[in-house]
Image (cartoon, one colour):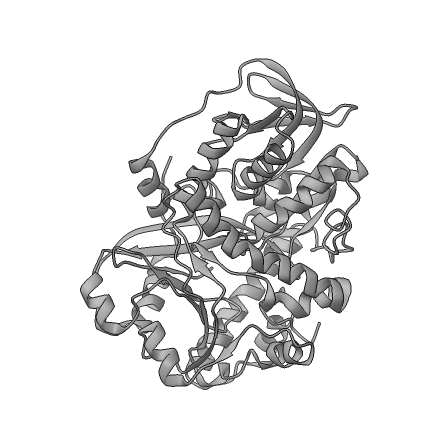
Length: 463
């Protein structure tokens, strides 16, 4: 199977493989999916209740899906505050944001406690404008946060923003000190090791073939099965195989490239710590550097999965690598001669409001799910595992009653309208935002199509 830069690097350091499930077994909890949500949930449940027999199955290797293919930007949810308020009100939105914010330090503390070298660097998030029309695009959010005395963002000068990013295209920005970067595949591999040490039974190369929704539910695999009191669906975009979850999300790509190391030259630009950087597009440019002096740069330009059928669509070099590389070069023209040495892509479970939903599959009280992290799950799955734990244990506490549980989400249209429509909207956004780089307006139809896009950091007020 094709491995992108992060996961290939992680496997070079540690490549243990758990056995495949080849028997019929029983468990207290069976978790489907060995990414961040599944692993954090297994660890949190096992630490709270060591007596629980927890089985986790993964179709490939733990962390090889979306968790090992993202940008490694560990952000909190204050940028999602307006979307959260629209779902659950001001008080609950603040509580959720504060809980999600604590996840940043929890990752660092966990890595230190368990000797996980995930290249954790807590150097903040720089939210920038990369063309004049993006100036103050964050103001609708930060003004609301100021109103509620909850604003974590620091106003910085354009000179400071350019210096921190090392890019002449950075025109202005704000800064959130409570964010970090990690090597995501190495974090996932570390979580896998800790889960096994705690006694979680992990089976890799064990894809789900069928979920029998009985009492109790039974998870069927190619060569075995798990009869469990509780089942957790923690499959990211792959969860769209369940009809109840399919129309909550659109499966789209996260497309990334990594350069060769160039530490001295990168340090000279000022882009020399673990800050994560984004601009203010809906088709977001997001990037960071690595401790050995590479730039890892992403932009969602690639493929949508028709009817959310993923197959091997994302198990290959990035088909949009040329466009992503071109965007990278525009931010760092002085480094244009540095080669791109790896490209990869991975699926995002993009929800309309950019926030996950949690609940019980089809109302079945023994089958819990979490889906829709929309590419922002590196840190927030840490917080989300608290929700999963409370739903599994039926504790009826502040997490099981969290405002993200059992949302009345706006469903995406059925196929073929979803596939055609999402491509039209994404292409319209790229067209509009490219024109804005030259301070030009898009045509009326393009502008209308962009109003149909899912919420980014700032919700679209026209919806």
